Amino acid sequence: QVQLVESGGGLVQAGRSLRLSCAASGSGFSISTMGWYRQAPGKQRELVANIFSRDTTTYADSVKGRFTISRDNAKNTVFLQMNSLEPEDTAVYFCYARAGPNASYTIYWGQGTQVTVSS
Image (cartoon, rainbow, N blue to C red; front, side, top):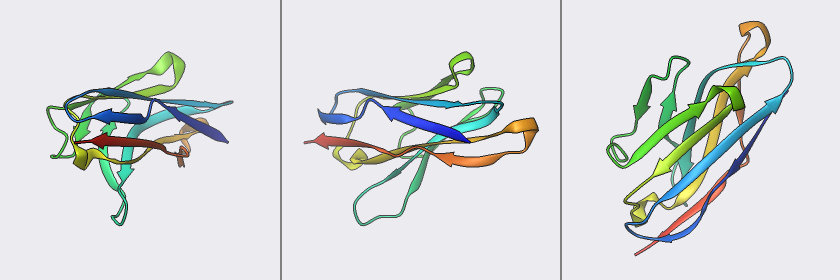
C-alpha cells in the first residue's frame, strides 16, 4: 500500500502564491507518474498537472504559465507551485501517484487539501 499526504493549502488573496506538497510513503514501491487534480464545488474533478517519470510535464490550459509541477524522487514527493492565483482556482486539490511494486502500478490518491482564493 502507498499512502499520500498533502499539505500547503489555505486561504489567500487573488494574485498571491501557494505551494502544495504531496509525500508518498510505504514500502517496496516505485512511482511512475504523479500529479494533481482539483474539484470545485458543484463541478467535476479536473486534471491540473502531471509529471512523468522522466520529468515531462503536462498542464491544464487554465493553469499554464501560472502553475509549476515538480518532484523530488529521493523523497517521493510532488510539488505544485501556484502563482498568480485567481478565485477560479478555488477547489480541493488532490494529488495522485501511479505507484506499486515491480512496475505493477495502481493509482493512489491523497485526502485532498483546500485552496481558497479570495477576490
